[in-house]
Length: 208
Ligand SMILES: C[S@@+](CC[C@H](N)C(=O)[O-])C[C@H]1O[C@@H](n2cnc3c(N)ncnc32)[C@H](O)[C@@H]1O
View 1 (cartoon, rainbow, N blue to C red):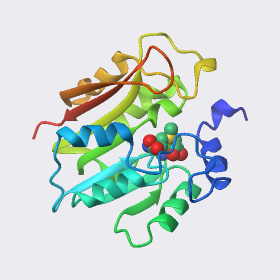
View 2: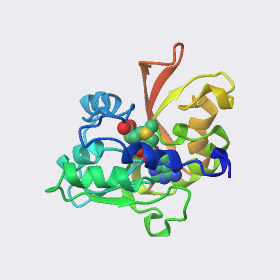
View 3: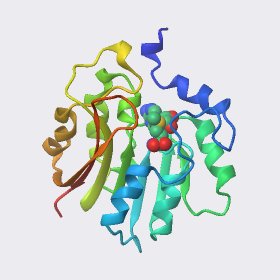
View 4: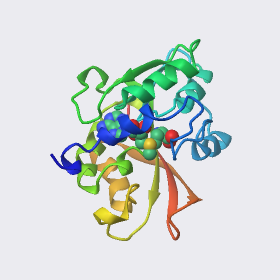
């Protein structure tokens, strides 16, 4: 079977070989993601008696950030070893760290979460999967809930050799709008890598 047929397998081996300090995980900040931290400087969260979901949570720091705002947090990653790192790093946390695959149905999470955070999961996978993954992420947002999507965004067509990560286009981001979500804010930041692209930090809301 080719790598394209098992698109998420390489994450497990990467996290299995990584340390709890993050050595071997090229994208980890081992802290709140800088774009999420920048968003938090101008946006407030009220998490009491609310639920949040972190998609592709990696080493878990963004889930811990959301826990600090009072949310009951669920955070999932396809790589079991990533979830093992999270549990070892944050043994006293109330975050429900789970191994789960975004490609699966995950019906129990449908329209359930008041706040959903997606940072760089879609674009860690081949471009052909974006149209499958975007509706799945949109589906997690409860009526009246918000979705924050952080993407490296550019206009150029993407080929296999360009990634990972594969740059998302503005069309991919606005695709969330066709799924019942409204854009309420967009912050544009300079991308650290991938010259001539921007990081879009887009806030969506599902009308109540
Ligand atoms: C580029 S990393 C970003 C991790 C984290 N969001 C961050 O910003 O540090 C992409 C993450 O998505 C996870 N992932 C990839 N495909 C997934 C899937 N189908 N379901 C759940 N998680 C997935 C990977 O294991 C990896 O942790």
